[in-house]
Amino acid sequence: MDEFKVRQGELFCEEIPVLALVKKYGTPLYVYSRATLLSHFHKIQTAFAPLSPLICYSVKANSNLSILKELAAQGAGMDIVSGGELVRVQTAGVPAARVVYAGVGKTRPEIAEALRAGILMFNVESEPELQRINHVAGQMKKVARVALRINPDVDAKTHQYITTGTKENKFGLSIPMALGLFREARKMKHVSAVGVHMHIGSQITSVTPYLQALKRLSVLVDELRAAGHALEYLNMGGGMGIIYDEEQPQTADAFARAVVPLIRPLGLKLILEPGRFIVGNAGVLLTSVQYVKRGHVKSFVIVDAGMNDLIRPSLYHAHHQIFPVKKSRSGRLQLCDVVGPICESGDFLGKDRHLPPLAEGDVLAVRSTGAYGMAMASNYNSRLRAAEVLVSGSKAAVIRRRETMADVLATELGAAKAKK
Image (cartoon, rainbow, N blue to C red; front, side):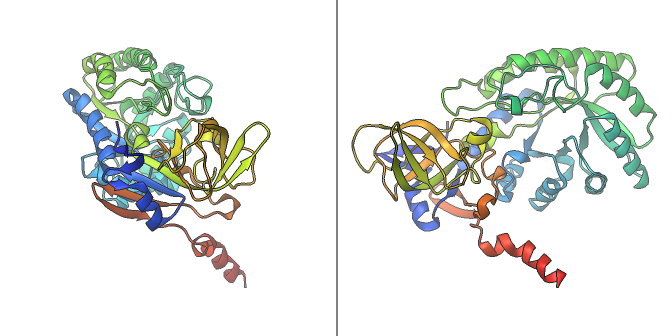
């Protein structure tokens, strides 16, 4: 459920008609509902309450500082994957003791900055990474806490670009490799291997892959304990799916009921890393119709938002519901593609959609864009990135102003001046 509702034929975000936001801030425009954001966080918090987990929001899903601050105020930790995301969570005031650091390519400076910050732990992806962390920590006279990321070789039944837990993927360690690396970690003076971690993919709509992975991790945990390794944490990652179209993902309660019986006997502190589940349906992208181009087979609704604003449809063939924010004219539904202004055939927001008659100036809502929307936006074709607005009840606040060309050119003009 979310707080984007149609009332008397017009779309509202909480208590504000979205057309009022468009009139004030223009398009393309990302609009987020604070109530929806916090409601989805609390659903996971409540569902897993018997295990008192640390819920580390996946920053890559939506890294806006205001979003991070809202979640941190509710007790959320953060799952980061870069030095830039570390700076973001520090700026948002998130305690370092609630931060876990994932990613396959951590650089030496990034590791050092995370150690200086005092993060909870690194999720280690490979033997060379563990050796690097040990070396950097040694130079700093510190001991780095780590969890080894296990690749359980489980098919998450999701898009091939967002499955991460099979042996063909670049992520994590096989169970035999992990056993050996735990032994190596014990010999290292500047790392402390305190946990196991997994993350098998994203937009997973069935609990079955998690159950398969947890069963394999449970066997590993037993083997590690038998070998004398003192574990403290089980980080089972994120990846819980949401409804974009006709998916039927598990609810947080149903998910917890299924997995808790496998987790509880392990006696480990649980960490979760949800992102999309929390923020995905908390946002919409608003875009204005520029032209309606009639074709032989279908029409093309050309809007002012493109793949630089929302790349998921082009990159993943992802489906987002698209509809007018206000019904302004009657007539038969028309078959059309909703496309952007980018000079690429892959620049579309939706294909083969049946929409009512549209004309220049009409505003469309692209639903479920809170996750991996603005976070993946770019300046391709030298286009300006959108503004973002957070709605709370009857109030709205700009949480990212619209870019200007001065913003886009600033680093290049500075470099050009330096060459002179």
